[in-house]
Image 1 (cartoon, rainbow, N blue to C red):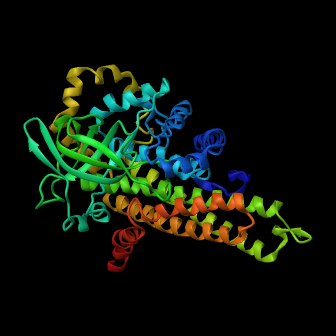
Image 2 (spheres, one colour):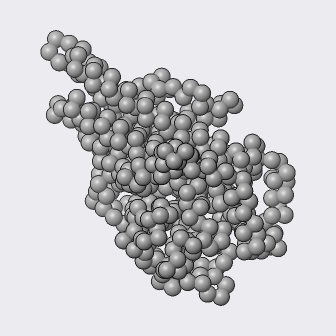
Length: 466
């Protein structure tokens, strides 16, 4: 198999201390040991039993620190940047996007907690996840936004105003009652903690959009249905139901009405990794097609000696390189333009924060960090530290990466199928799976049409006006 580091370069995006390369080496080893050997087997199993859970792979992921990879080091995590996560996901997806998305969807749920600086959750659920990972017990996160009648709408503030919402949070004494449902939630059926975003008032969805951390097993919360999927089967897409599900005030993320802003920050962070997912799927198809062409005899020579094949491979390589450069730039822009101002150059890894960890975890301290006044001050701090122009630019470029990389990846997979033809049965089976998997990358995390709209609204429109 062609080594990715020899095929594509990271260039200026590599961090100086070598963290990205170390994580890439770990991801490559994890892929070769635990993903490549079982990818097809799990994909077939999920076709017959959509509820099949590849739990053993998550357990193995604990050994490699994959569950806590994006968690800051002062909380015991791997301190990985968005760019780091994207590079790792590309590598894992070259093996199997469904398995990789178990970790990718987990990171999405984590990012809602981390980017909102939810200190109460830092010292409770994040601490639990980090400590259990060391014991080989995966604690999985998920994020629930999409609703039965509102998918794309809930990811854009303009569309949210007229969205056909079905899930609401009613304020009651001591917390909220959640009622409604969320659909197509990756990891929704296996997550211990799900970040649920919804409106508190039907007539004012934008002003009352809020997020809540809901634990599995909470009364009134269920995840009974898992969809039969065409692609990325190893990662469940679940239907979540809420029936008078009580969530205490301490589990609210930020304050009511602040979550549209947090949603934009999270999407600015998450769409570059989704672009990397698409790139990784296409790279896996390219690598297998290249190996097949090297080894397949065609007449008196190899298939690789045919000029039309050489030109097709060159097209595939060029599209992959373009896709990788695009998502790397988007990830780099978020890390330098949003994360560094928010977290500081030391990325919240100051030893002082570690020193005060026992104090932060006391009951009085947790009561303070769970209070509305503290959460409001943190929400104000986040808005103060993140420049709105840079946030919008980062969201625009991550959205561009998402739609351009996934569109390019579909073209790469189609070209791979053309080269393989009916003779390359084994390789064709993998590429057929790649095409099924990559199609989802054009749809989730906001459809590609929405992402084009975001690029225009957040970047191009301002340039025209200026």
